Image (cartoon, rainbow, N blue to C red; front, side):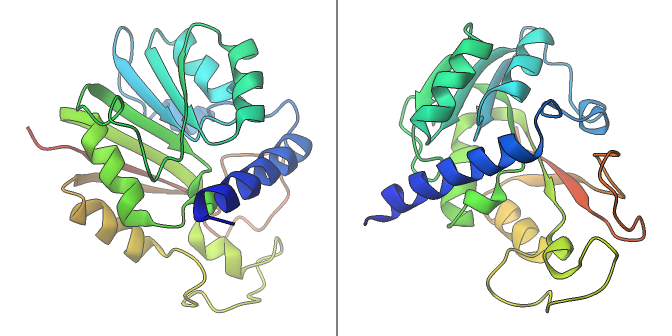
Length: 211
């Protein structure tokens, strides 16, 4: 099985589990909305758009949205939810030329790092898609949470090579030619989940393509 097919099947499974666990709770979290630039009338690329809840939120904010996902099943659901979007079926680590033409004001993605097998290739595509001065906004589970249970007990080694660390992510962002603007850490973006608030459960990263 080639890497793309393996990635597609893994991402289909991520979508299924995500939809089951977070039914009715998907979309852009409020604290992430506060970090968004003004997207009204702006060209926004939503990577790993999944079933389109956050895509629809971007459309409601006035953005002109293109959205990419590797799962055809997820894209079918996204089209039903947000039909006024240019959808592209592709592996985000191998973005097609039509996306990599430097025309987007914002590249947005959330809860997507689990599907990334090559940070450098992924971020190269992000950088190529952005116009000069455009921004990249990523939010996801904080890498430390892979080593901590919901009660805050350490169960694993944060420095294992099987997961991305913040250090690796920041280094890859700058290596792609983007300038780090902000790194934010959150006790929780999802207040309905019971877990130890002494642990940073999510983070957001904002970077900019130099003019």
